[in-house]
Structures are given as structure tokens and as C-alpha cells.
Image (cartoon, rainbow, N blue to C red):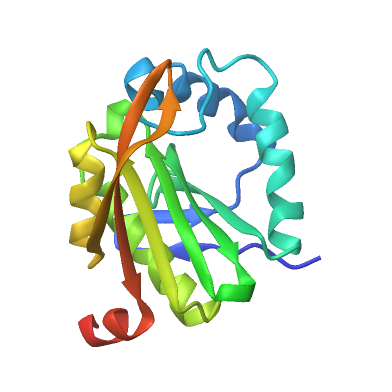
Length: 183
């Protein structure tokens, strides 16, 4: 069993989730504004869902399929959100996903944690490409992608259905050589 990473930034600590985080995950994800523009998070976020999600992380990591980390405040330790790389080893790529609890919006936490996980993906995992998508109606997520150096790659019309709405998706990506040049 491999040990999941802990990554420190100027203000944050990205660490493996523990079962002690479950109630705070449920509290943060009970906020409609947080889940409304995500592709996978259910609503309502019911009892037991956080525990099941947390329990899957280590196995996903051990298989090399995914690394999911808690975004926490570096000094005080409180939970801010989550960040994930879903890895495709064969093609040396990963998709980036994240969510931030509403009380912590507009503090730059998402950008700071995304920069840290990109570094981990390229420098530790040896990935060649990291990409991310966001719903067209969530331009704030797109600004995070731009701030971390991702390039706009396209618009996918009515690509997913969420909450009964066919959603357009914006697609961003960054290659290892682009990441290396930006450092």
C-alpha cells in the first residue's frame, strides 16, 4: 500500500481525507451553490456518502487511478474543499477536478491548490498532460484553469446532462513542456 501524498503551499495543506472529515464534507456539500456546477456530486448529500467516498480514496490511489486530497487551511487545519487527479497511466494524462466550500470562495484557494496538484502530477507522477472541464455557466472555474496555465482547447455543446439540463462544457489542458516553460 502506497502512502498518499501531503502537499504544502503558502497557505494550504493538501492531505489525504480521513473519516473525521465526513461531517464537514457533508456540511459543505449540502450547499446547492457548490454542487450545482459539478458533474458528479449528488444533491442532497446524504448521511454516509462522505464516508463511502473517503473509503475509496486509498484503493483508487493504490491502483494508480486517482489521487484525491483534502484542501485544508495550512495554519488552522479546517477543511476548505477537495482536489482530484483522475489518472490514465497508458496515455500519461489526468483530468483535474475540484470543489471549494462556499464560505471559502474568492480567496484564491482553488488556484493555489490546482497549481500544487499540477506540480505533483508533472513532477511526481510523470504525467505529460493534465486537462479539466467546466460547465459553460461556471466561468469562475475556467478562470482557475487559465490562472494555472491551462490553454483553452474547445467547447463541447450539450456534452453532459446535469439536473435535467443539457450542459455545454469548456475544455482546457496543459502539457508538461508548457508547464516546464512556465516555471
